[in-house]
Structures are given as C-alpha cells and as structure tokens.
Image 1 (spheres, rainbow, N blue to C red):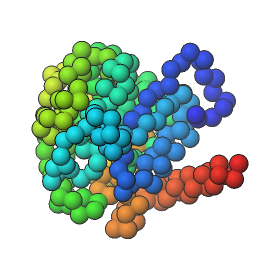
Image 2 (cartoon, rainbow, N blue to C red):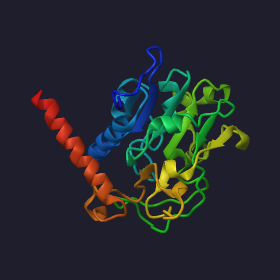
Image 3 (spheres, rainbow, N blue to C red):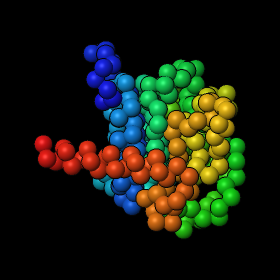
Image 4 (cartoon, rainbow, N blue to C red):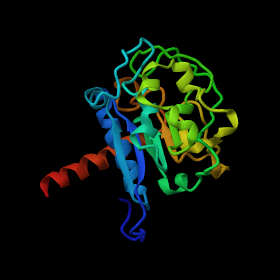
Length: 249
C-alpha cells in the first residue's frame, strides 16, 4: 500500500476502489491496480467488478445489450451496493493509468454531494471504440467512467441490483436518480481523456493525474502508438517485473 514512509493511522479504513473488469482487458486491470497501489500513501482496497461473479451471486442478470462495449457497462452502478451503502468508494474503468497519489483525489471529497466526477463536455471524434465497438454519443459522456460515490447518501440507496438490472443506460450513465446540484465536480486531470484533453506545458494544472485511454490503450494492437502509450508500457513492465518477483518469493 504505497510507500512505507507514510505513517498510516491504524484505525483508518482502506479507501475502497472498485475497478471495472473485462476478461479481454485483464492486463489493463492489473496495470491500473498497480499504478494506484504504487503511488498511494493511504490504505487502499482494490476490488475488481467481475460480471461473472456478480451473475453467480445473483446480483446481475440483465442480458448484454448491443451498445455495451465492456462487461462493466452497467455493473459499475452496483458500487454503492457492493460497498454496503457505507462511506465513500470509487468506481473506475480499467483503462486508466494513475500518475498521482489517490489520497489527493480522496481529499477532494465533499459530503454534501451524492457523487463526484469529472464533468466532461465533449463529443468523441471516432465512430468506433478500441475493438471496433460502435462509439455512442450521449449527454454526460464519460462522466460514469470514474465516480466517487457517497455510498451512504440517501439518494444512492435506490441503486439496488433490481434497479441496475432493469433501468436504461441513459438513466444510469446520466445519473438521472440525482438532481444536478447533488453531483460534485472533480478537476479533469483525474479523468484525462487521451486524444481529447490537452496538456498545456506552461500550466501544471493541465498535467494528467490519471490518464483514461478511452479510445483504446496500448494493450490493443491498434492503439500501440496512442498518446501516453509509453507511460502505460513502462508501468506494465514494472508490473510484470514485480509479479515475477512475487512468484519467485
């Protein structure tokens, strides 16, 4: 859990981070997980949201729709339920690479909100996604790809397995169970969209703290040369090296 130099309060509960998991992107998940843990100065518990597990546990039963490009398109909204509707927890897609301490993000939390996220305002240029899936355009696109959930907030109690399995994509991805003022904003650098957001060299506030390879990351052949590919590949090599050491030990 981060560096050993940081004194962690013994009673401090780990910050729960639920990561969307897709069997086709196992490596992306592992690298995302590695990038969070390596830089974290607080205890963090990382939990993959695996659709197969949720199905076998009776928490997820909806049929896969044609517009679902990943296995976690809808399962992400079970985050408050999986956190027992207690405290704050985060959901994040697996195609993220963290470059900063997750404590910085956690410290932005404000209890007056039901959720907090980067409130992107954009339309993707591409008509297809990473693996040929159709790129759909809708309001609040990408807002749900990284969300801080106030799991105990009364409004989030509606996110039961029944609701998540039956509601429309529009209702869920646009957070229609909430009023606008219940959605807090997080700086865009925490969900920095590769290919869309831009770094301004003279402005440190534009340097990404978490890169989101929303079009497709270097783990797909077609996106080996995307922007920031080198950072992801470096992290992957570190993860592979660390895994080997763990096996040897």
